[in-house]
Structures are given as C-alpha cells and as structure tokens.
Image 1: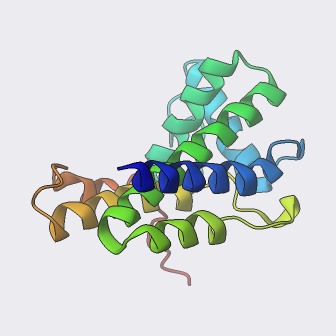
Image 2: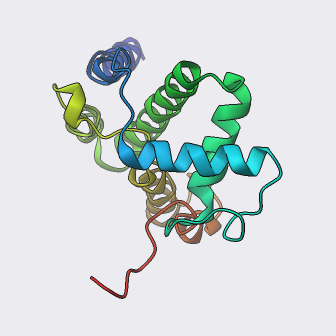
Length: 167
C-alpha cells in the first residue's frame, strides 16, 4: 500500500512538473484561440455551427465554454483554467493506463504527453480530451471490474477530430 501511494505521488509530481512548463506561457495556440472565440460566442447566445463554425466536433467548444464561464471572461484566466483541465485529463488518462498497463505505462504517458519546450507542448486541444474518453473505453473493455459505461468509446467522437474528406 505504501509503495502504491509513493508511486501515485511520483506520477502526480511528474505530471505537474512536465505540464507546468505550459502554465507560464501566455501565448495562445491558433486552435485554442479559435475554440475560445466560438465558445464565447456560444456563451453569449450564439448557436454553434450556425452563428459560429469550425470543423471540430461539438465537445471541444463546450469544454472551452465551461472554462470561459469559470474564468469570468479574462483571457489569462481562460488560459489557466484550460491548462488545469489538460493537467486533470492527463492525470486521469495516466491513472487508467496504470490500471491497464502498469505503473510505467502511466509514467511514460505522463512524461511523453508533454514536452520540455512550452511552445511545442500539446495544449488543451481536442486530442487530449479525445484520448481521455478512449482510455476510459479501453479500461471498460479490458477489465470488467472497472465500471465505466461502454458509451465512453463513442463519446470520444464529440471531442475528437472528425473525419476530413480532403485529407
């Protein structure tokens, strides 16, 4: 039990250490700013895909709309809340990977889902949230003791990238 707690603390520390590189970065990635702009329009009564549009699925806009409501409309606070969301998503994915593939699988994901240079780090983008639902699905399908509804597998679609017919 003590060993498991120590491993959990090391995992959380690794996630915070590697993901904290992106916290001081005040710059927005192009995609993030687009998602936030659409989310703000939705928060102000706009209709998604009618008043505002982009090619991403609906889930990412709701995540950004929630962050904008929590942050109170401040760009800096929006960025901080979204970074916290991405840290929580990486932690949850890492815990599920620990359940599926062991501690080192979780630790490797925690380290390699981010990077040392903040300018190249995966921000709070669609991929990080889509992987969260896919990992939950894997846990459900691989282990019946992990009580996650199978709907998670299909719920990755609202946050993941849609099929692009022009690729």
